[in-house]
Length: 469
Image (cartoon, rainbow, N blue to C red; front, top):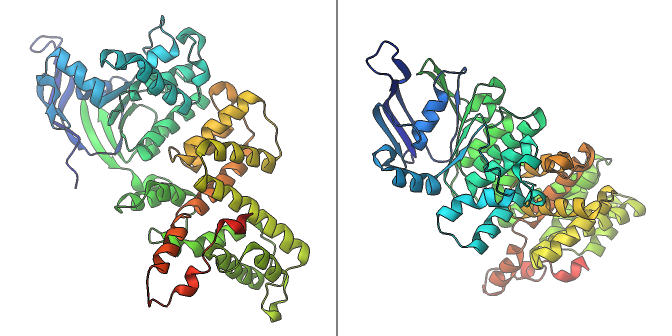
């Protein structure tokens, strides 16, 4: 097991000790938090949960006991040492935002790097990248008073992340937000935990938020009353993802795909993944054939993805009668199906073999044509920004979908739910087909350099660029 990233032992915070108005804000608190956990500290107002959070950050000095963060007892440092430690190791998000009203959005985000001595150019590059990720880059020159509550909190989150801390402490971060903005912020924290591998500690009194956590620390009257392991209460998708987390050496790209394609297994890598790709590509495009026709078509599609047949042969064999070795489709369906396969595989090839800016523009236009919608330049840029996050594996299908479905004024793409889901589903299939795509060419080279293996026929049939033209 990993060493704990946070260790709290016999922690007590007592105000007016020994006096008639003595108050025990925290009373003998003990627990450990491990790297990449999502912890929620839950309890009613005044129970001590915020005091506990501030004790972990070094903003609150304990009366007794110790708090170690990354094996450092932060409260033994002087104020300058604490500030340095927080700036580099901990990101703080508050309910009240605490943005500097006289600074622009970008300057607020970049402020911690000013104290760190970062150059102006580097500060702005990092700040703009974070604002772009959270869908508020267009607000960079505005002042906090010009923003909605949800936008302010996203600015605060970007500021907390500017130093790339391992630990994020969030004190009732959605307490002042409407339901839509709260949902966006909670999804961002979920994404930071699952995609960015940040350790999240969230303070909340709202029971509706508890399913996000790996573990819940319940508090009452300054004491920990219960520790709850929450995995069995989480959605089945999250439980399944926990299994994937326990497996080492699995690429993050494959982990993200596993959230969408539930039948994929961690053993399916490289060429072992191709049969699964064939099935998903088939089911994605058609759903109105007999089981025999689908099974035969799946086999042909698998041969196509392996490079044993080209697109023209795929179309002809789909149209061929079953008794003659075909799939028993009619000519029109075979033609439209093959054309659809080619469209999708063209996007896969572009994403694999060309510059990301070129392939991203092509993917954007492809998706807009696919869902038959038109967007103005600003909405196109925002959609393109969200697609880039998915292509760079900085979000998953759920994260992409809610960004697309979120209203434009809240930082989303403002698409309707149907279009958002359709685009997300299409992108996810393309990402699946893209995964290990280039390994086929590497396998061809390896086989060609292997003598006496009996695999020469495979090497001669590996897919080439020609089959996508």
